[in-house]
Length: 178
Image (cartoon, rainbow, N blue to C red; front, side, top):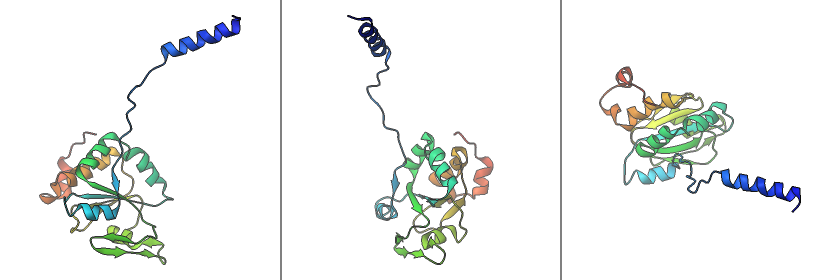
């Protein structure tokens, strides 16, 4: 056996011996994003608060929030347990149905009317919109939030604190754990 073949065998043997074997590669968890149509249907069997990530394709901070906040394992687990989560492109030209009402694209404003409704005309992206219940008015929180910042909002609505106290009162005593 020549020296090159022997060397190649030794290198292969070393790589084989020291390679890490990961027999059960776990798929990364992610938020169970639904469509508005799916949420409308799910509400008929189980009522939960709805979290809407209102974004646009051109929004830099929307992409950062997707990458950092919505990929945080604690945020993922909490949202999947306590909310119906929906991503809505504010500029979609598709008709959107929410609570038995249709929302259309408004070419004059270059925005879907649903985005105007949930933000009460105060557009900014990203905007996190929470519907405590399908029949209640939305709470729109404009701007980027990291995991620690969104924790307070999620727990206020996800644990039903909005039913018994103001956000200001809840916020004054809230201690972040994320």
